Length: 120
Image (cartoon, rainbow, N blue to C red; front, side, top):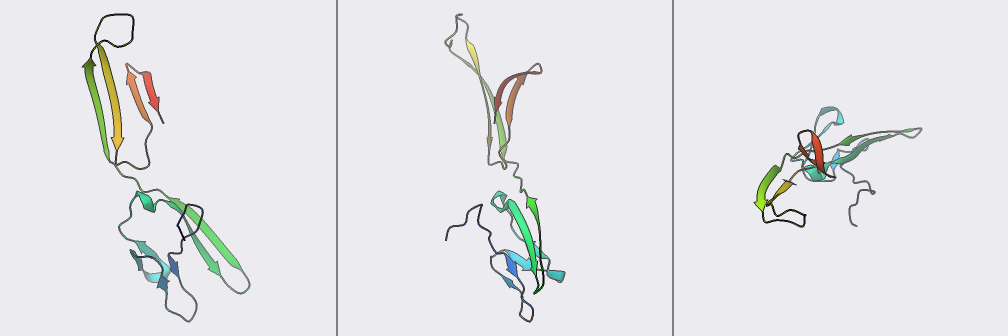
């Protein structure tokens, strides 16, 4: 079975009278049923849910986790041959690139506070 964003993935389970069980590697069981997620990456981002079931009732609570990665930001400004405009002047090529970054950012290039390019 493939794991997808829509399918829950069991990380930890404790049934009364039995020892707690972790269903994934990289999890350490702490006191009071806390779990420690080790070696988190941007792929660890998602909605985490705790479910407590008893004979009479069931309670659930969830929260979102976003794991950020700084990555690299590169801005290049290069003079290039004349482009498809009406003058014969050389033009400037501006590129802005973010790599190995999570979640992916909005990239904005501005000149004197005027937005030239917005990339989402």
